[in-house]
Image (cartoon, rainbow, N blue to C red):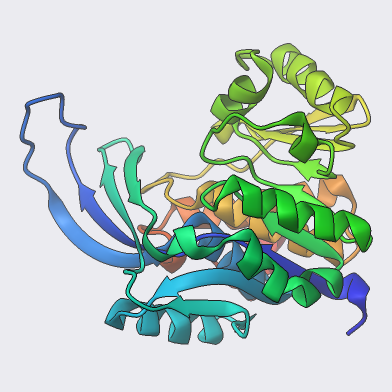
Length: 309
């Protein structure tokens, strides 16, 4: 395939330990849970899987521990149509871990141990820079070292590879990085962290998008949960509604949106149609438990959209 059809994803890989609870525990409180599962996650891996299952030609730059679960994750990534040649195994380090509580409303609360993800250094990025230079788009999140994200963005900019940043989890970011980003996809919390504006309405979203545009970012998508997404291109914004479904849990909903969105863009879909395609993928994901286990395949997304028309 030509460069125009390739996607590089740089990011984290975690083993997710998930426990369902009636409510999140308060400090000092013990809550009995149920449906304990161990699943494969990490924002980078989730977004890579979402793109791979949605049909992208994708290569993944990441680090795994030299443990049994790391081997299992590597096998699964290959089954999800992902080129794993640039996934490194780090000797003496465990695969990253996320401890996830899910409450009765399907909301989640997460604690993370980086493990091997911390080895995704600028030197590691440099070893795999060809993956970035040959891609049309580079998709990143913030569970990797910030200096590595900046290094990858600089490589991408130098080789006309589009940079898509999902600024999650919320982290303060320098303008030096933001100025290299072509598309940014924060949720409401992350948008407030980056702009200081609490996003409670479409007007708030438009103002937050304006601040991000002023930092040099051409396209801003602020995901609004059930309300959809605020899509703003060079200051012209609109809200694109999502689909109404009954959520089981929201783990990886944002990751699914991001992977599906950039896949659709690489196929030549308009921003609006790509957002609708991504909404469909995320809507399917929230009706299923877990992270990667909930991510739909392309045929499921296409079938869902046919049923909506």
